[in-house]
Amino acid sequence: MSANEIYQWWFIWLAIGAGIVVAAAALLITIVIVAHRIAVLAKTAIAVLLEIEANTKSIWELNTSRKVAGNLLDGATAIEDNAGTILNALSKTEDKQAA
Image (tube, rainbow, N blue to C red):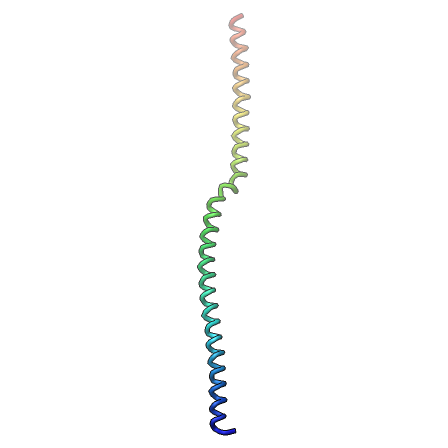
């Protein structure tokens, strides 16, 4: 093998190695760009998720609202019963006074 052939093969393998390095660098740059896009989309998704959570908190409080409404209904029923008792007592007193 002559010196020219050695240099020729050396440059061929150097070109192949450079091509591999350039391809690896291109893949690495592509991965970094895609990772950046994913990070931006993840931040957007988190912002939307927090907005959804804020908008749906009231739904999770419906059970508490139902319990409070039940307590109010119980209180209103007790007031109605007491008012009926007072009305009956007043009616009996008026009937006794009229007689």
